[in-house]
Image (cartoon, rainbow over all chains, first blue to last red; front, side):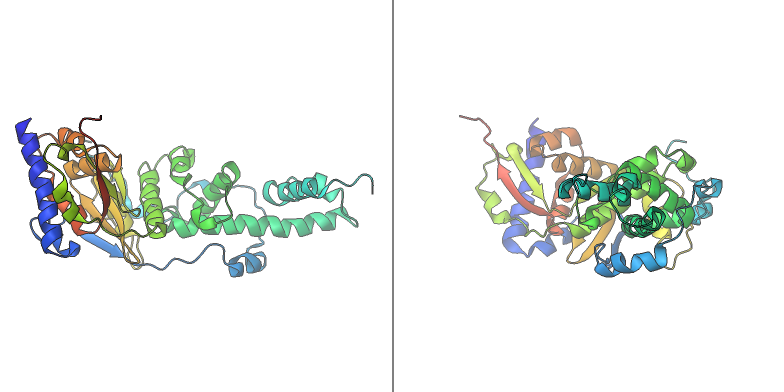
Length: 91
Length: 259
């Protein structure tokens, strides 16, 4: 119980100290290195309600309403590169 | 024109014709050759279906790559029929796809697919989330030791946590632009913190205790309860890390003994 109090106290004190002395972005530098590799992806996404998509869709996309065929149920993308190797832990 | 429906009824019939393909009622009101009218309505119907499918593709590019175009389009077609958009902004459409994929029999051989989709939706939501300024931690100094366990933290709106038993981050990375789809790891479990830094979405792998702590804070529990759940694990660095990334947007000190 007391040790829990102490943990909380030191955690809050850490935030206060960092907040007083430094810019927020510097807080992570002391002892809080990321646990894993941090990946950053700054991908600009296209808006989905563009009139361009809507109005030109009928030209390029007015395919027939195909009845589903068997082959549409078979995954044929890069999942084959994963083979059958993937497993959750403990298996 | 006594047989013509009101405008609202006509619009409902038009919507049924172009979304559900249930065009008979609407076509009955049109002049001219019904077959011609049906072919013209089909242009709208296919354009709408293509736009919805396109919105899903934009939100789930990795899922699309993993399963290929034909499989994705067919799954998307079924999903859009079962769960059409409920609002006009298609950027918000598709939250239900991971759950749909989890129960989609043709995807049963890819048990990690739904979790990859959850990660993609988290990425997508994070990108669209509101901005928020970091909290003023100096004000925490005014919270007494007594009151500290009752603290609750509000995180940045872009923060998401994805927990999976599968190596979904490795799968996700392997299917980014220019990668060949071969995952660097074949085992999970992956606990992934998703957040936005400026205009960029970032992902970081967390340890299980840190993910558990974050999950508790995100659920809005008090610091005291989050500490209880953490057991002997020291959560201070995890909290400092969230603060350092600018992801603690606020806090409030609950009343330890409500009057």
